[in-house]
Image (tube, rainbow, N blue to C red; front, side):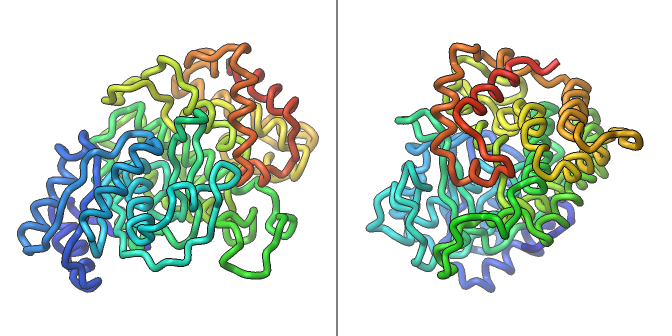
Length: 419
C-alpha cells in the first residue's frame, strides 16, 4: 500500500495517472456513490482521467452499507464493461463493492455464493487472477484499502456477511487526509469507532498458534490468522492514535493534524486486523445492522434506514471486553491504559471491568447513543440478534473466549443500555 500526502487537485495527476499508466490500464472503472460523485475527491479523479486521456466509465450507484443486490448490480456493470483496472473512491462501502465487482468480473462463471463466507456461502478459495484495483479512501474507519474483505447485507437472512480472500486486496491504496475534511461530525465519529474496535479486537483476538483449523495449503488458510506479533504492532499503534486524536477529529473539522492521523490510524488498524482478524464486536454487529428497523443516523444522506457499521460495532464493546478479559487480561488492561485509564492500583482480575468502564466514558463523552435500545432494539429482539450472530463463525471463532448462545444473549442484553 502506498501512502500519499498532497493537495487533492495534485494528488491524482502526480500519483493516480502514472500508476494507471504503469499498470497498462486502457479501460478503467471508476466506482463511487451518489453523494461522493458531487464532491472534490471524485471530481479531481474525473478531471484528471479526462486530462490524461484515460478511457473510463463511472459507476456511482454504490449503496451505503451494501446489500447482496447492490453488489450484484455493480458486478453486472463490471462484467459488461470488460475493464482492465478499477479505481474506488469512497469509504468502505465503495471499496468493498469494487472488490466484489472485480472478483466476479474476473470469474464470470462463478455463482454469487461461491465466494461468500461459509456457512452462508460456499467460501471457495479464489484461484483466478484479478485486475488491478486502486483504492482511494475518503473516510477514516474501515481500512478497506488494506484488507482482503468485502462486507454486505445478505437480505434474505437479514445479516451481514462477506467475502474474505487475500486475492481481493487492492493493488494500491492512496491515503490523502484532505479527502476526509468534508466528513460530517457523526460520520467521523462512527468511522473512528470502527478503527477503535479493529485495534481492540485484533489485539485481543485468539492467538495465531491456537487458531483451528490450520490447513497445510496456504490457499485454504483464512484471511484472519489470530493475534500475532506483527498485527500487535499495528493494532497498538492505531489504538494510541485513536486515543490521542479521535475526539479532536470529531469536534473540530479544521483540525488537519487530527484528521490526518485518524486517516493513517484507519490504514494501520486495517493492516493489523486484516492479518489477525476481529471477533465478537464485529460478529455481533452484523445482525445489529442487518435487522435495522427505522433508525436513521444524523449526518448520513441516505434514503433507507441504517445503523452505521462503526456504531453497530462499538455499542457492544463494553460488554464484549468485560466478557473476553478472562483470557489475556493483561492485554485488556493495557488497552484501557492507552485509552486513558489509571491502572496503577488496578487488579488484573478487574481488567475487563476497567476496560468496559473506560469505553463507556469514551463513548459518553462523544455523545454516542445509549445502547441498542436507543437505536430501536429491545429484549424481544435478542433471539433474532443471536440467530444472526451464529453464522459469523469467520470472526466469532477468533474470540479469545468461546461463547454459547446464552453468552451471546447476555452480551446483547448488557448492551441494550450503556450509561
